[in-house]
Structure formats: structure tokens, C-alpha cells
Length: 129
Image 1 (tube, rainbow, N blue to C red):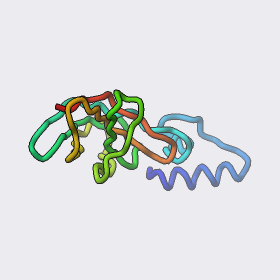
Image 2 (cartoon, one colour; image 1 turned 45 degrees about the vertical axis):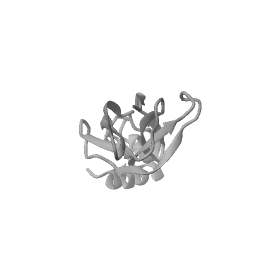
Image 3 (cartoon, helix red, strand yellow; image 1 turned 90 degrees about the vertical axis):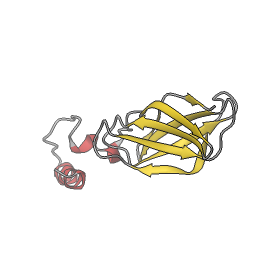
């Protein structure tokens, strides 16, 4: 059942004053639009080349809207999104993908973030160069 159909069914049930289904991982109220942030991706490798720095990751969630790459130049004190380093959701879970940055110097930290309307979850950290 599509998430849009699950949401419309839940709204119809809720407006009638009775919600018949329990909250489960696949129920309408567990849909990302109802407050469940995606699971964090796993950054399993990195590649440094003349073009920049690439983080390879595994998708551990099925409810993300987008992935984006962040960097930190102060040992994780603050994180900044890398311009242009994003991709849309990977279908299902377990899929592998990569995000690249043309920036990166010795000691720069990178992480991949999964995001949906309910929140964001960051991967483990990878160090450049």
C-alpha cells in the first residue's frame, strides 16, 4: 500500500473518531510524515582523488527523502552541508551509493545524513586524506 494511501486511510479513520490499526512500522502513523526520522546510513569507505573526496555509504532506512554530505573542519564541533553533494532517496534498504565533494583537506571530517520531514540521522564519520 502506498504511503499516500496509508495516510489518507488514517485520516479517514481518525476523523471518524476511531483508529482501528495499531502503530506498527508499516502503519500510517509510522509514515515519515508522522514523526519517524530515518535510520542513519553507514559510511563504509572513502576515496580520495584529484577530483576530491567521495564517501560511499549503505542506506539503512526506507523512509528518507534525501541524503546529503556534511563536513566539519573543527573535529565535529560544527557541521556544514557540502553544496551540491546530495542525492534523492535510495529504494528500500541495503542499497549502496556515494556522495562527493570537491573540497577536503587533511583532517576534514565528512558524514552522510539521511533526511525526511520528521528529522535527520547522521552516519558514522569518515576522515579526509
